[in-house]
Length: 153
Image (cartoon, rainbow, N blue to C red):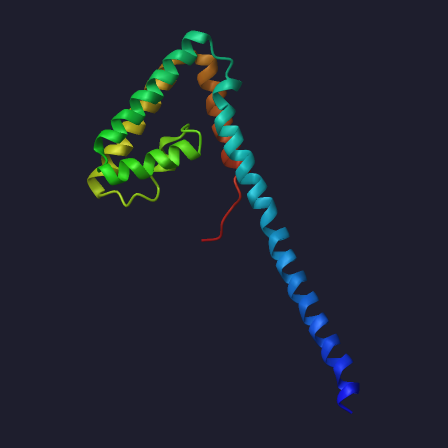
C-alpha cells in the first residue's frame, strides 16, 4: 500500500514545483516590458545630448556645467552623503546627479538647495543650445513622457 502512494506523492511534488516555476516565470515575463522600457529610457536620456548634434564647443560647455553642478551638490552634502553619492554616480556613469541622491535622506533644506542647483544647471545647459536644438530637446522630453509606463496610483 505504501509503495503505491509513493508515485502519487512524487507526482504531486512534481506538479507543485512545475506550477511554482511557471508562476515565477510569469512574474518575470510580466516585469520584463517595464524593465526593458526603463533601460531604453535610461539609454535615451544618456544619448539625448548626442542626438542634438552638439558642436565640440557646446559639448565642452555642457560638460563644464555638469562638473560644476556635481561640485555644488557635493558641497551641500555631509561627508557620509557625499561618499554614498559618489559611489552611486561612479556606478551609474555619473551622468545624472539626481540619480545618486535618491537614497541619501536629504534634509528639507538640502532638497531645496539641490532643486535650485538642478534648475539653474538645466537653464545653463539649455542656454548653450540653439533654438532648433532647444525645440528638439523639448520634443524628445515630450516623446519620453508619452512612452513612460502609466502607473495606477
